[in-house]
Length: 269
Image (tube, rainbow, N blue to C red; front, side):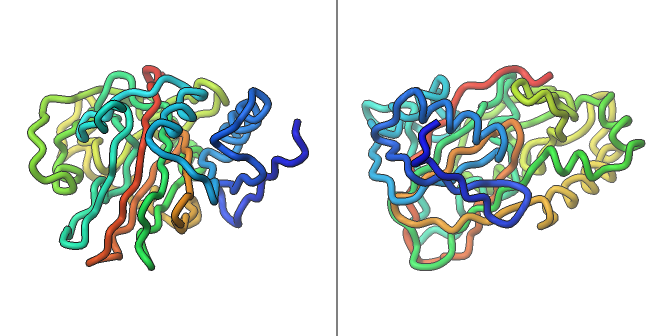
């Protein structure tokens, strides 16, 4: 392993800063290093990178299969690369609720890479939470109950619909285990999210709500999360199977522009 690669894990249960790697020029050793670090830390942060749509797509392709994002049209020539933009006059930020990406698909995203192009002078941080730890924090009785449940995930759920005005895409629904086993680490984790999960399979929304709301509140607790402060040239690479994220909307009147690539995943089991 190259001794120039360094991992600095911030205080908290998730996330690590990686230094000593130029993401425009990584070899197989660096790819293996990043894969191992992602399995251990769930989300990785890189500073002072110089990426564009082409180089971000090339980078993402080293870790999986880039796929278009359902609700944002990709860039011309790079359909898998989307711009996530909040303009100075906008009041809502895209995806501004705790969520796991594309849980409404039969095969949700494995992960995503997000790169900072234009960053507000202040604000616009992203929170990430560790879903292994959330599951481990529950009582054995609750873990047993949830382990036998499936949940309905809806792309048009009210909680997330409000963050993407004008979207006409509907009908994306998927049923997934409430507790999934990570295909790499083989660890169990909680796999429901406020943005998309509407009810337990075989139960009504009103019957499901007390337990789901309890879990949504648990997911938001700070002891499971870290906060990433963006800078121009920063990149976050997260394992979408094992974490959730929440982009803060605290920079009204400023531009925030990001480039993003999603990686194809597998069916949760």
